[in-house]
Image 1 (cartoon, each protein chain N blue to C red):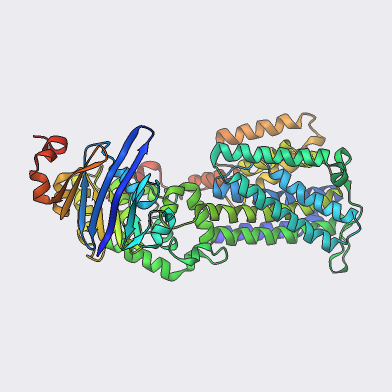
Image 2 (cartoon, rainbow over the protein chains, first blue to last red; image 1 turned 180 degrees about the vertical axis):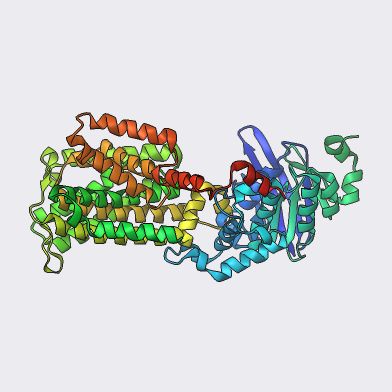
Length: 245
Length: 324
C-alpha cells in the first residue's frame, strides 16, 4: 500500500505556478529523495503535503486516507511529521522540553491546565528515548541556546521521531552542517526503522544518494524525472537542470 | 531553591501583616489596590506575556464586570447574584472579544483589541440607561462574606489578599501545566506547534478565557473598593496603564506583573502626594526600566543577582561549553 499518494496537485501564487500536476506514489517504508534547483517548488510541495498550504486542485492520500482538506494539525495525529529547512525550535527551553512539547502535541494532556508538566514521568521518559535515538540523551537538560547547529538539527529529528510518525518529511536536514555534524545526522537517519516512510529534500548529493532508493526531480513545480537512483542520476535531463555536466 | 522559598515566605508574612505595620488605613487601602491591580496585571500577563498577544482593551473587560456588578446591585439584587452575574458577563464578553481579536496576531491583534476597548468605553459613556453615562454607577454597600462586613480597610484588604493568593496560585499551576507550556509554544513558534498537532487558535482562546476570568475578578474587587464605576475606568489610558504594569515588572514572568502593579499604584497613590509631576516621574522610571532592564524589573533583577553571585557563567565560557 502507498504510504503517501499525491495526484494532480496544483498550486499557484497569482501567475506563478509553483506546483504543476504533481503525481507521487511513495510506498510504505520507502526512502524517497526529492531534488531540484532552487525555486523548483520542493518546500512548497512539502507545505501542501503537511497542510500548511492548501493546493488549488489535486488530492493527497496518507496511508489510504484522503487528507487533502484535513487541517494541518490533524495530519500530525494521523502519522505525519516533518522537519524544517530553517530550524524551528523553542530557543528559550531545554532540549528535553522541546521534545516533550512534540510528545504532548499528540496527547490529550496538552489541554490540561492543572497538572505539572515536569512530573509527567512517561512524557519525560519518552523524550529521553527519542533523544537517545539521535545521540543527545546526555545533554537533554541543556538549554537549546547553548547547543550547536548540528545538535539543533538532531533535536528537530528527535521531535519528529518522538511522535512515532508513519511518514516523515525531512526538509534539507543536512543544510549548513559541517562534515562531522553531517555524519552524525546521517547516522541518525540511517538508524530510523523501516516502518517509517521517509521523504527527504536535499541538495547535498553525497549523503542524499546514499539515503535514497527512489528519486524525484522537480523543475518549475513539475516532476520531470522519477525513478531509481541510477535512472535519475544518468538521465540527461537531471544533468541539464540540476547536476550539471 | 531554598532562597526562593525563604523570599516567598518573607513576602507572605509581610502581606499577611500589612495592617499591623502600615502607618494608617490609607496605606492599607493602597495595599488593597496593589493586590487587585496585581490580579488584573496577572490576567493581562497570560495574554501579553505567555501568549505574546498584547491587548490594549483589557480595561474595557474589567469595566464590563465592574459595571455588571454595579448594575445588578442598582437593580436591587444581592451581592452573590451581582458577583456571579459579573463573572458570567465578563466571561461572555471575553469570549466575544477573543473570537473577534484572535483572527490575527501582532499589530493586528493590538489594533483590534484597542478598537474593542474603545467600543466598550463608548458604550459606557453613551448607554446611559445601563451605565449612568458620565455619572457612572455608585455601589453603596460591600458584601458580608460569612457574616464578615468588608466595610473596614483591613477586612477588605484581607479578602482581597485571599483572592489574590488564589489567583496567583492558579496562574502558577497554569504556567507549569501542559496547556501553559503549549501556550508559550504558540507564542514562540506557532507554525511548529500547529505541525506538532496543537490547535493554536483553541489554545489561545482558552488563554483569553483564563485572562478574562482574572480580569473579571479584578473588576469586581475594583468596583467594591471604589464603590463607583465610570467610563474613566475603562478608557485607553487605563488599558495602557495595566500593560505598563506588565511590561515594567516583566512580561512572561510570574511575579513581574505584581511588582509592576505595585510600582504604578505606589507612584500614583503615594509618591503623587509629594511630587506634583508624578506622571513624569512614572515616565522616567519606565524609560529607565526599558534602558537598563528591558526584560522587566523581576527578570532583570534575577539576572543581576545571578551575575553578581556568578551563577551564570560569562558568555564566553557558556559558548565554550556548548561546543562539542
